Length: 290
Length: 156
Image (cartoon, rainbow over all chains, first blue to last red):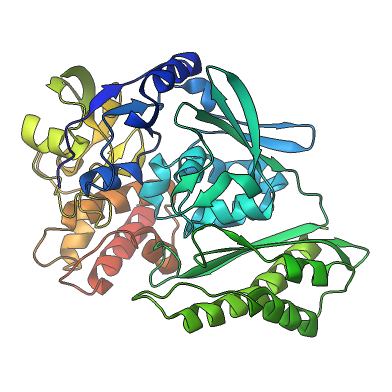
């Protein structure tokens, strides 16, 4: 359908954007890459009174490394992060996930901050952010605050960003050379939203797993960390038996939703398979990066 | 209404649009460039794909106001003098399409992809075109056409 009537503001500084958000609050939708918001408008699932288009905020686009963190500006487009050597070298899990987002034409416009502020639990970036304990810098007229990923995702398309706040940047920890990562997913077609996805990252110290990160997409209304499986993995050496047990633990307590793409039982089975595949691929990638 | 100026297929165009007007509708309704097709209008089918500043984008998921100052290429821009380009000729020769509704989207997506990846093989081409839907062909003839174009470009 054609888009509904909507007012339009195009600020050129973050300060202007924040003033507009303070004025309109929940009446406004922030328009970043538009690859999720414009379909929502077309389908009348979102009916904001005003669009605040932040594509002109050049200060929000860019990738920088400081103090062991990689800060990615909210309006950095997905293809830019995908082509970034900094991202490839410092956040291998993000680099693994980016090519799986939508299709090439979607990544031309879609932004890192837009996907994470949209908060679709079936998308790749929320699982990556949750797995890595990313931090979200938000700004309003009353100042800045930093929200950890564990508190960012509150429900289906719901985050802890308040109506008067703008997402400024997302910070990911820099992975050491002994860290390997993989993003595995099962989708009907390449580029579709996955039925289930898994962000997996392992750090090996002298052949022993010293840090393990596992987060699923598509299993609940928020990305889901597999904490029990992570705890099992730490202190052990990678092996088929270990990854088998991790897959069992990671999926023991879950009750995924059922829809026309798959039953709850099917999703659970995919999830276990993805854990085995993802851990193997992450361990291989850790060896390659050493 | 918002006044915008942009380049389309090498020519400067100015217009006045409502903020909610998509780039696809602006191209079709205001500039009369109806080669760009509108299928699903929510970013799923790929029929409206055009090239903006060198990259393939879905023109139904971009507002016309956001294209102000940009360089846009539509399917009309590929054969300005009426003779087919390498990709178009190869797709013609491979009988890539049937009804033609999805054609401009596939052609623009493949144009952007081949210019960035001239040595792409079948697997990469399939992946690059996976966001475009065709209901007639079963895709094989489309892939054949793009592969043929890549081969002819390499052979010069």
